[in-house]
Amino acid sequence: MRIDFISDIACPWCALGLVSLEKALSQLGNEIVYELHFQPFELNPDMPREGKNLAEYLGTKYGMSVAQINASHEQLRQRGQSIGFVFGHREFIWNTFDAHRLLYWAGLSDKKDAQWKLKLALLRAYHTDAKNPSDPDVLLALVEEVGFDKAQAQAILQSEAYTKEVRELESQWHQAGINAVPSIVINRQHLLQGAQPVETLVTALRQLNSAH
Image (cartoon, rainbow, N blue to C red; front, side, top):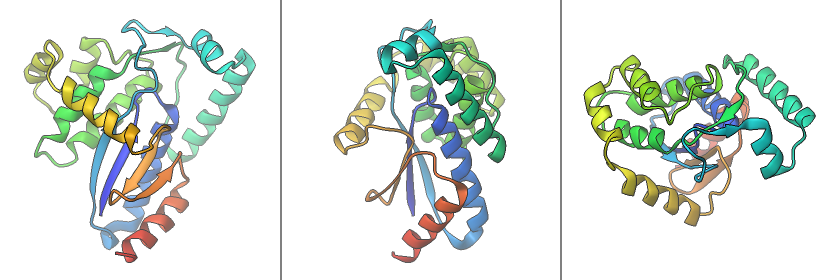
C-alpha cells in the first residue's frame, strides 16, 4: 500500500493528522505493508521568511476574530492532548518552503523512516516550540537531532537544491485536486481528507487494504 501524506508544516491539523495516522498504522501492525511518502503543500507560499503576526494574518485572510482564533487553538490543544501532541503558544506564522526542500532530500535517504522523523521534528518545532522553519539554524539543529548530515543540509539551504522538484510536486497535487490539507492519498486513487480520528483511519486503511 502506498500512502501519500500531503501537508504543510504550518498546518496544525496536519500535525494532528500525522500523529493519528502513526497511531493507526501502529494499531494495524503487520496487517498492512505500506510505504509512506510526505508530499509538499504550502498554505501561505507568499509568506516572508521573518513571518507575520498570527492573529493579524488569520484576521486578514479568514476574517477570524481574536476570540475565534483562541477558541480554535483551544480545540487544537484538546485534540492534541488526546493523542499526545502538544500545541504551545505561537504568535507568528512562517514560510515553510526550505523545510519542504529538506523533507524532499530526506525522502531520498535509505535510512528507515527518515522523512517521517524529520517531518515530526519540524511539526513539533513549529507548533510546540514556536520556532521559525525559515531560520537555517533551526532547520540545521533539527536535521542534526534526527541524525542527518548537517553539512549536507547546509549546502542544500545555501543553494537552490530541490526547489524545482518541490514546486513540481506542489503543482502536481494541486492539479490532482488537492486544495486542503492534510490529505492522505492511498495507492494514488483513494482520498482521506482532514485530521481524521485514529479509529476512522484504522477502519479506512483496513478496508482499502482488503480491497486490493
